[in-house]
Length: 180
Image (cartoon, rainbow, N blue to C red):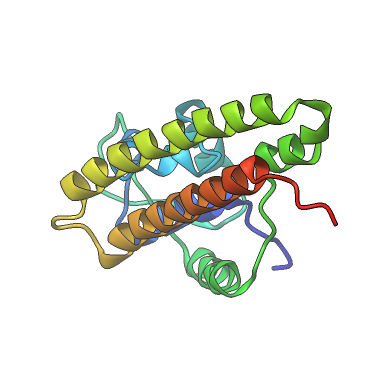
């Protein structure tokens, strides 16, 4: 099958590979693990994704499920495609496209004090997010698969790195110009 999984499909397939689930259960796991913050899966799109994956033969309803809620599990082809897409996702470096880079590229349009003020506001937001995510990780990590802790650790490491980058950028913007 020459099909590629979208990031949203890959997320859903991975959660179904953990254990069979219905749409509401998928959403609960996505919320509990904080996945909505870094994945393009909205609650309203889950059922569309499930129908699409079923139509493509990548998942199938599990027999014995509730008549009101269809429980799905990956098919053999779905597991194979998910495993390969997961391997590629882990091995392939993909460039980030955060809007902050556009803002930085356009920073010469602002006076330096305004740029520093905006970066300080971003630093405050990063600090708040670090605190929030740390608390969320501490609540979710117990009893969850090891990959869940790794997801939180990755997000925290990226935020910590951004915090350092903001600090260094502000220092360079506030440094007196050295002219010879």
